[in-house]
Length: 428
Image 1 (spheres, rainbow, N blue to C red):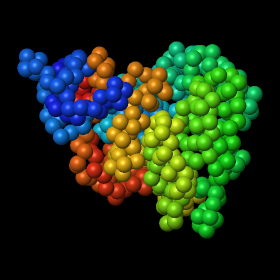
Image 2: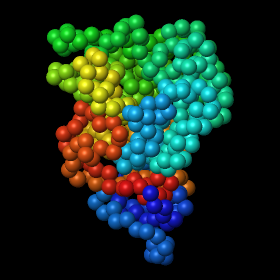
Image 3: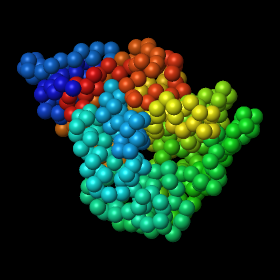
Image 4: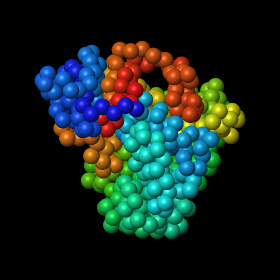
């Protein structure tokens, strides 16, 4: 990763939804920050700068991924911070948000320090951490949220471990609110999901797979919204999968609750029908649901009910997916497909360029409380240059993630990252 003290990106189509910008411009970067964006950067500045010809290319803020499990510490046989930040940076992702379900759990400041040191050593994409909402994620005792915030955690979460005790949840929401921390929730009722692996319906019945009903997600959202309304907590619901969940979030937003939501990008393309061959790469939680759910999720992004799209990155070693479908480990290695799949929605005219880029940059930044995701003068120079007409196919050979577990192998894409810039440094 080379450091460029001065860099000019010439005549790219600059799309910056946060500033309402969509025009052909020059971008001048110096000492890791954006110094100017103009029709033409004068030759005097150019004389001391490295130049990139971006004619015909698209320049956007660096992608911010709201949920990426990097497997370190604890599961380094699946992936490491070094391997996954390299993969992220080459895929245009400049900031990753790490949930607290590492091993050890991020419920102590020492774990935050360990992750920060690994990030420093890797020197690729930025990483921000969510601290544990409860000690050891057991849902019994509150974590030391104030200390975790002081150590750098930008929010708190119980990850995929639901808090079944509503009194504990209420106190956790109150405590988080008192420290101005956003609570991140992955809604799932463990009693209703009951170790299922597919959407409860005709397809799961025909395939003989244990099902997970919509209600496993929506009942948790409905319960939590009652507490949020009472307490006034700021809450983000992650990885929605059903139309019913979208309806509940929309109602809450209309009532003025401080509620946001995201969807994993794979939920916008695949449905329960993709399980017909028992492809374990389609084993995800929450499961792929009906076509109607997929279409409602797409509509919700276009209309701002769901604010962000994430990768829900979960790299696995090959053996984890070799078992029969129900016994395989759930999750997709999603860093390489986050940007191209989202831009495929632009090609399909489901989203505009501005909507797609905002869902990957400025709105995730707002959710995380970060001054990122925009190309304002003075901002940190995290940018991505995209070739919008470069056809390519996802293969294991061109995946940089240590995990190759994805159902999108063999898919063709027409948007390819040409260059990633992080802190003014050229990455690719």
